[in-house]
Length: 188
View 1 (cartoon, rainbow, N blue to C red):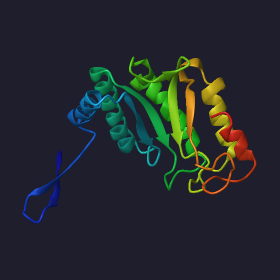
View 2: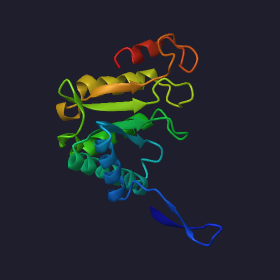
View 3: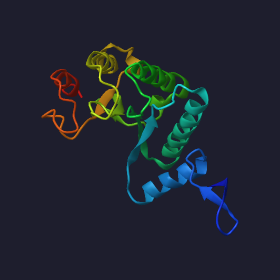
View 4: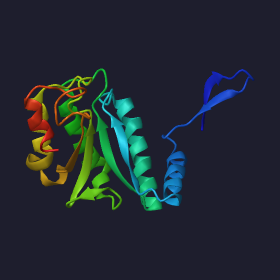
């Protein structure tokens, strides 16, 4: 736990959980091993990922996840969250650039503990097609999906999993309803 500058009613300082600390993440992975949990999707929020300081601490947490998975024999994969209030259609290029950075600089997909399906690293993107998410450009999304699945240089290609609305098949309720969304959901 990390001590904060917030005082409790008894005068002591409040302590908070932080995944920035490697020992905290390792402990969670040890518990996963003890209780038979195979692995995790590391949630990587796109909100403010363009800010270098924010990107660095988020990447530090991912390094901790990778190291803990390797030490404990657990598995991990990245899950991008595109549901932030500042996220726009232009953020899809940031997502692609971040993935390339993670593959090239952090070498996450070289880890023997990174989850793979059909020989490819698994990548999850949460928020696709949700009415409450700002990203609504189906052409840009289709381009991103196609890039990840077919057009990217081989080392960046993935088995892509979409975090989509509960009513995606009918395109009602929490799902965007325009016909073009069928072409987004189908390849996921």
